[in-house]
Amino acid sequence: MSKVRVRRLLPLVASLPLLLGQAGPRLVPDISARNIEIRYSFSGAQLLLFGAILYPGGRTPTRQLDVAVVLKGPVQPLLVREKQKIAGIWMNADSHRFSSAPSYYAVASNRPLRQILDERTAAVYELGVGDLQLSPGGGAQPDKERRFETGLLELRTRQGLYAEDAHGVTISDGVLYRARISIPSQVPVGTYETETFLIDRGKVIAASTKEVEVRKAGFERFVATAARRHGFLYGLTAVLLSLLLGWSAAAVLGRRG
Image (cartoon, rainbow, N blue to C red; front, side, top):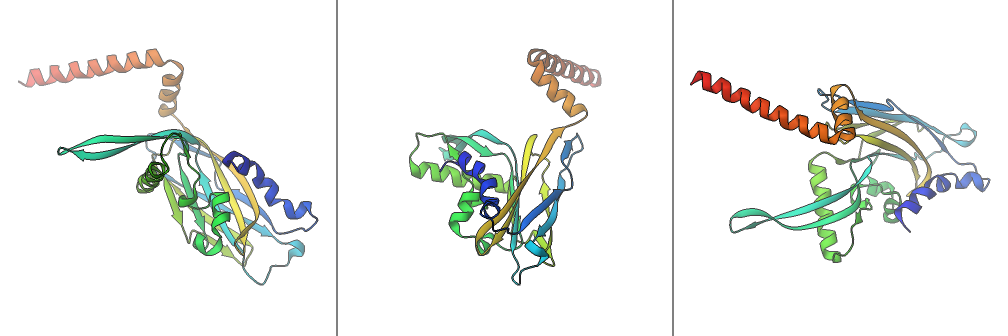
C-alpha cells in the first residue's frame, strides 16, 4: 500500500470503532501555537502539544493507554551525496536521489515506541525515525538504497532535524497528556503537521491531526519574498552589494596602508 493511500486511510481507521457502533476513546488535542515566525534572532522554539482522552461513559480503563505525538515538516526532494577519501582528498564518490523525504520529523511518546507498538503498526503510521517511508528516486540497487537511507537518517538526526523522545509525553490520571517538541533554528518554512496517536496493546485506536505554519517574518520575509518574485533583480542587487562591499573594504585598507 502506498504512503499516500495510507495517509488518506488514517482518519477512517481512527473512526472505525464509531462506524461499527462500538464507541471507543477519542482524542481532543490542541497545540500551543499554530504559527511560528522565523526572524533574524530565531534560535529555535518549543511547541507544546496537549489534550485529553475522552472515554465512553467517562470511565477510565484500569490499564493506562499510551500516547505518541509527531511533528512532521513538509516533504521535499533530496539529493544525498556520499563522500570518500580518494588519494588523500575527500571527494563526492556517489549520490542517490530521494523523491520525497520529510524536512523535519520528531516523535515523542510516554514509553519507548518498541514497547507500545508492534513493527507493522509502527511502519504503517511511520512512528519512529527508523520507520519513516522515504521515497527513493528509483533505479538504484536495494543495497545502495538502504545504505543511503541509513546515511540520511543518521545525518538528519545529528543535525537535530530528526528526533525521538521515548519519555517526552506525560499522561495525568489516564486522561490529560502533554508533550514538548523542540524546533531547531534551521528548520525550513512551510506547513507542518502534528499527529496524535492513542495506542492500546500495540494498536492505534484513535488519531488526530492539526497543522502548524512555520514562516519567515520581518526583514527575512521581505528578502525571501523578493528573491522568489523578482529573482533577476534580487541577484543583480546581491552582486552590486558584494562589489560595493569589496570596493569599500579595499578603500579602507588602502588608506591604512
